[in-house]
Image (tube, rainbow, N blue to C red; front, side, top):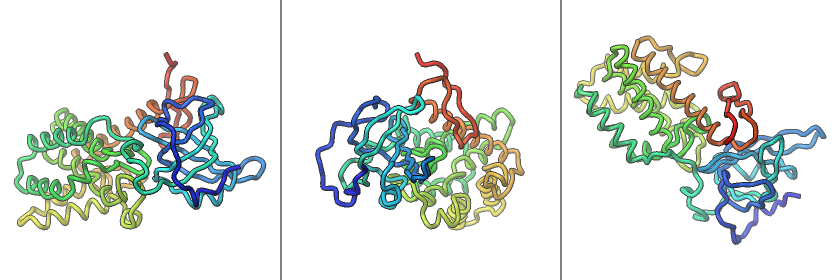
Length: 328
């Protein structure tokens, strides 16, 4: 039976690091993971249980809590690092955790960098690449001043922020990784179709800037109040407008074009756009954003696949399974 001593834990000796990719059926695990998803479900017997997804920098694994589901759900929160005491089992050819004990961590109990997934490339290197592209492609003095103002104010967050709470690039440095990729893809499309590359790379740079204020912080990928009520698109427009208005003489038409990139980059009203792309550059930016987000989801599923067989489970983010291929 799962103990509710999660409210009174005292510190205890913890075993060596138990990264998800190294877990084997039969292992007894006492270690830390990010609680990525939490949902209460009902078994065929009518009994409630918790269905959980844990992640670390090496992968993801499902877990189940069969006792005291309601009370336990109240003391653990998505996006938080938790300590678990669990047994690794196999169900339907996939490894999963049978949870005996779970709690959120104490302050300074463990360094988040030991647990949190992150970009493969260092944020500093990605920022250097992004800066080099902007320096090469942007020559308009108003845009250069806008880049300077936004970089000065938001660089620290840009270097670390996740690109989303759950869907894609949802790890340390994910926002910068996604932004850089979108700029690079957009630049390729600009070359191919003779587009305004200066505007395109600015659109790529700014399209998700609102996520810095939408997501609470790098350790807790939950929404801020502002993020919940407005969303990153409206927040992004506010950020760009606020900074542009501080630049004397910033052309209204130029600000309108930048705003259009932000409000149309999701491509359609169905997917949260406030406007559909109405310029060739905005259309190219949408596809750059879409390609990178979808490829990241595919890579995430493939890299974290720990089951048997040649295909992943059905993934609601993309509405399909993914072919993995036979393991070597």
